[in-house]
Image 1 (cartoon, rainbow, N blue to C red):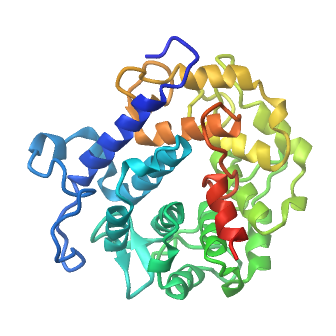
Image 2: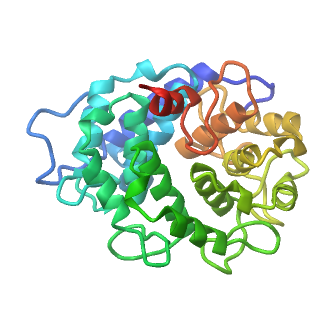
Length: 347
């Protein structure tokens, strides 16, 4: 593991490309959405290796393959290496997860649609500037159809409600320029109803404050121009208290630090203009000490096994702290800033 404060960018790129290929090997042939053409290079590598298909990465990511693609590809873009993959092949694979009858995306080929995977699909297409492959209104109608009477959102047809889905829906529709398809004020009102006395937010009204949920709620309010509902000092204090003695951030009081909160906490602090309340130098050192500098990848904490999830959120945290050589990341949309600017400023 790392013992020097330096980002092993090249090793991380190699690790991500390898993981993408290995997890692609686990994509099963679920009819009828398998393309009739041969598997693309994004899907094909290592298909004959049973050992690789049964690897840890493949087994744990099989059902969230689309999320993994978003984490890995966004990391590559942040490191200026998105060209390491073939854009056309990635887009073809993304669309093989699409459900034209509903307008949503599944987490892998043949999996049921869910708003979570739909956002990841839209985000990846944004990376490659390929939203043109979508029936935008069909996708937007799928997301809008999940809004409930109280303004909340369900994740899919089974009806689970969570402030994560509020953020996901608002982010997706905003990226597609289709926020007008929902009742935005009701969506905002539901998020605000999940605010707690400590300034944080929970998954539901009365739910415990958690850094992940706080990001979702702050992000949702930022996207809708509603940050005035937040007590910035109160929430900023709660968030800055998430920094532990080792420099890392945790998600709740009395928990261990975890690299992923370098994103969940920092992004919220950036959006409410309180990021200067944490020790960036100590947090940067914590993230870099979670690297595998030889083989690439970042773990949740030093000396643990690396994974694509923590690799992305570690790099994302460094981006928010303006680490040299890492592209700036938009804290609300979780996409590189140049991508977001292209989406909203392109004429």
